[in-house]
Image (cartoon, rainbow, N blue to C red):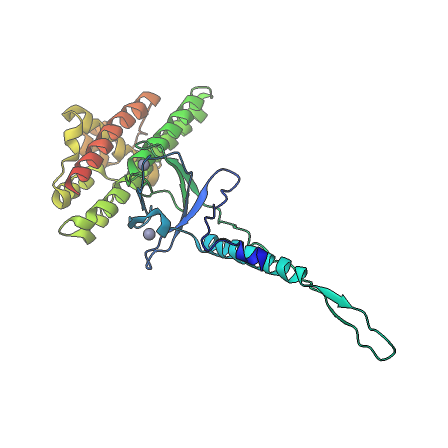
Amino acid sequence: MKHLNSVPSQFSISIPPDETGLIGRECPNPSCERVFKIQPGTGLRGENLPCHCPYCGHEAGQNKFFTKAQVEYAKSVVLNKVTGALIRDLKSLEFNHKPRGAFGIGISMKVSGRPTPLQPCREEDLETEVVCDKCTLRYMIYGVFGFCPDCGVHNSLQILEKNFELIEKLLTIAGTQEASVAQQLIENALEDCVSAFDGFGREACRVFGQNVANSKKAAEIRFQNIKSAAESVNAEFGINLSDAVDPSQWITIQHAFQKRHLLAHKMGVIDEAYQKATGLTSSLVGRRISISKDDIHELMRGLRAIGRHFHESLDTKS
Ligand SMILES: [Zn+2]
Ligand SMILES: [Zn+2]
């Protein structure tokens, strides 16, 4: 049993990363068990750092986050080593006694068989890759929003910033187009700004709203109408969104959101509600709104400030 005896009683098995350098992880929280990936060595450094589930925020030691595929792979590595050693030991006992004399019986033992094969460690393909702007961990998740598995920061603000960067690129393209195409791209950019901010705001309310008095109401706040969103945020979280910008900027932002509403529902034609809300002269009712590239840049500047203020205030309250 020379080979079998040399098999160690403890194994250290390294999990192979996928072709992009990421390693699969699975949340051990029984009500979650969702899968994500991280690139080892890109985030926080240190011994015994915990891991955070990007989806539910569950925190536990790194060794609790193995995926089912990794456990199967690890088991197959051990089985492969043990069965391989066993087969080699049995092979060393092979014999072949030829029959002797007229009535002799020949006896032989021939060992055949292969070690148990390794179970390939195939992980799922995920959807959004994020590089944490706080700890630089590279990770991948389903969906868009999540906590950083290393430092635990929520990525909603970072995703907002990523969306705004994309909108800036589209605005640059608009500058190279003929007027009607450029106008369409600029109007789309306004819609995109509002959608990005709405996505950010809702997610922030959902995640951080779990600690406030009326968490159901907090999770229902919508951000397509910035004025009523600000009122709800103030009521549920005690945070004043307009504190992040000066009063004239706050009014400009509200008007931009109202323009988005006209574009989405009235083909961009000014109605009485818009005229009253913005204080325009009534002669402009029935005319089409106008919006420029600079307006969008200005809007993004304001929304960045509001987003940061909201995120930081939520962070210090939680
Ligand atoms: Zn989880
Ligand atoms: Zn991080």
